Image 1 (cartoon, rainbow, N blue to C red):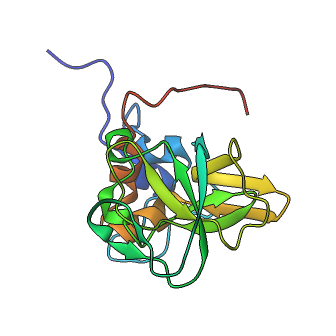
Image 2: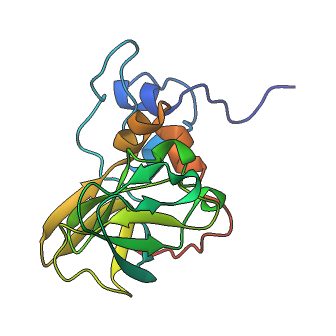
Length: 185
């Protein structure tokens, strides 16, 4: 018995023009992320636009003195008087613990570093350098944000580099408990 539709091409084959059968499996390209050429640091195309945006909001802001411990295990200590915001997104939502003290989130169009351990349900960010950061401010975990302080973008590849993994893992690790909203471009 012969299959009516045959395919053996993924996103990379599609972008290289190597799809010779009946169909393709675009995979990562559906997310708007380009695969890299085998053995290369360069994406196959720069024409894709990341199609996913993960957002949350600030639920608490605290002023801490220099030397204060932040998060479980005191994995971070403030080096100056600091404003620390809590975001209700953690590793149970798909925000990897490997982003502890190395990743960033966006607030008001500006990067805010993740400080302390990414916990199961919460993450702390340093908003000391984000003027007027407040409870209910939108926080972008993955994607772009236009805000009063500028326009910034956190891409899947950047997050993957911080985690020591690949962008596919970042995009597919967002848990089912994170609500999805779909819209037309």
